[in-house]
Image 1: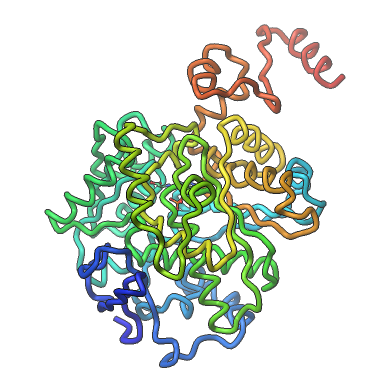
Image 2: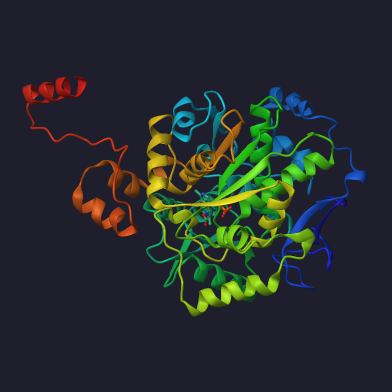
Length: 465
Ligand code: F0G
């Protein structure tokens, strides 16, 4: 592998380094998270971001077609020819007039980054292609993850495409949207439904993969986050290399926010951008660990010394109260985010803020995203709901440029969408009212009509009026 890349503990007091040939999901010395780092001085990183435009005309080379590997020089942990690809990262940044209006932004200043356009329908493919590339280099034969659905769909897809690695997925029982479960089953992954929630599945998969020597692809895997940096590179590319003022992203296990912070930190360090955008991480109110710790308890990365005593006390209290995450945005129904410290670091690098939004706010925002573009799954809409909150608070100014990352495809979770729009009282009660959602202000109800041409025509005329 690349002699100039290595793994390094994120704790500056430890700072232990390891070869990229090692399979690690935590620092063997102190237990903290690891980064993939590069000896940039021994490499020749690009001098400017327009450097990457030369690859636009090389789309016949699979790695140059990939929206991840066409930025290879910014994640060079192995040579380009070793990099696997299934064509991930063909995603789009769209300006949205309607969502700008909904969130209180000036027209032309609100952008949506549609990561649902990836092969498995979520942003996870950006990271999974990097993790499976690393898995191949270290000779892994099976890979596992705990998942709220999208990581498992992505792992299952990569394993079914590449053919030489078995996917083993751990999911909380009843905690996964059907679109995502159906993907894992269809792609042939071994699927284990654990009697518990995501946090339980995450704890078990760590134990089991260690015991059985299975390659773990959750976002504690530092190679995954290298791939996820490229979401930010594509946003810059779409904005003609101009840096937006804000990146707004939903927060679950906090891998994305961590990767985004690292991406901008590195770009700034390499002199490729002159400013770092501010980062807003949006929790669901029913899964708001980061919000509580960062905004209420005032916990900060603090140059690598976050107050671990208070963080531990927070989780101990959560245990005592037997508190479990609960939100309609099942993708981010997580109370014990594994990348907490990396995310705190990203918030420091990006002068970040954290907000929480209710399931009502999420579903209203989701209906607006759908009505004004390609749509998204509930968790993704947290970014739009959060932008509206930050705009109302005056933290985001109407003439700033804001990019909301839409992390997953609209078809991932049809249950929530149909319950919101259908007007079916029972569905609304069972799916939404139980979560405190009281209204569907932006619902687009289907009409019930007789099987009769005259009745159908009359109904259409009535709607037109
Ligand atoms: N949005 C979607 C659609 C997701 O699937 C996830 C995470 C997130 C946001 C949160 O991202 O974890 O990087 O903060 N889904 C994981 C999974 C946990 O298992 O699919 P994060």
